[in-house]
Length: 298
Image (cartoon, rainbow, N blue to C red):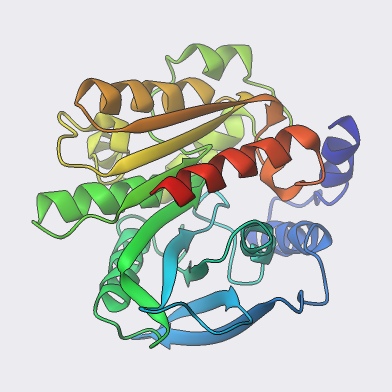
């Protein structure tokens, strides 16, 4: 883990310019992505009304009814990330189970702050449900997943669907998600200077995504602010032990559980934010195993 942290930090740029940071993030993510593309994975790029999507599926014939599908929303603090930064997640998942993954190239802050990214996620979700993305995807067997800032969007998507009477996905998987802008959680202090995500860095990302302070109390922006969570789908919440976000993820799991929502909670022992990029580490591999066990059960 120490080697992973040090190598990840070596990609950081000394510039505060956002474009330089985005380029550095891309270089880091590509380093942890196995290339060339595994022969067992077939990839197609397309768009949904101008929103870029990338679909990954096993390079074999689909089962009857089409591939069970995951709508995936990438991390990156809402201000970084693209279809090219998170191939590693889909490859790691497809090595472990036969599923299709539809990744969304949602608009980024600060150029497009809240609610732009959520609107993009909902638009692609609706297209998958309508069978408009690909004929070999099962639009009935659908889960939504996101890591970090993408976990915010995945949870917010389910809240938005519930509020508007839309059909819920079969499950939501939230991996080290951002769920609140509040700073009173113990891990925000005990892990304030944790590697790869600090409390100060998190605050800066939230400020760019939610420049209107009142939005930080909106459950569709920060899902832990929801006054009720009835009607949400089965949930997998994974947190890293050494992450400022740890305790808000655990708090959301507790709120859901209290409301009668089925919850699987996973604490990654020894992990830091961003560890998912390193599935060769035994504890990270165990997290992927727990996620896939949950998805198989769903």
